[in-house]
Image (cartoon, rainbow, N blue to C red; front, side):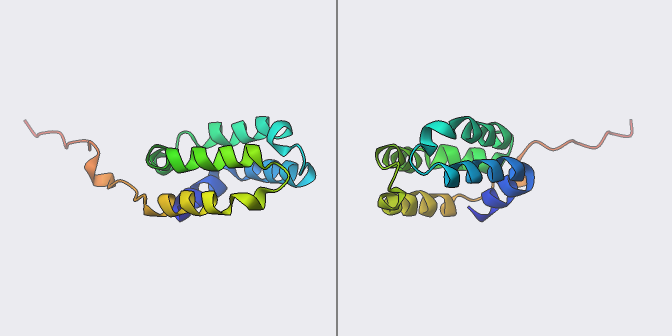
Length: 110
């Protein structure tokens, strides 16, 4: 998870800042009013392998977390258990071995 957060912060910091400011400014309606900013983060991160891995491996706990947020827009603290489950899942995701991918082979001298 730390790697995913670092990738997101490094490559999508502006999007994260805007989303965070929107959520803080609109505690009653952030789910609706900040959705477009959430989508901009998703677009920004979609090209990073570790984040794609977390999305695949942790889809179920993340969906439960999002459902909880929708049901508790004004009281996000009610979703602590869903957040814990998602973060625990994400922490277990290991970046794939970069050497396991197809590597360019040196040209033969023939």
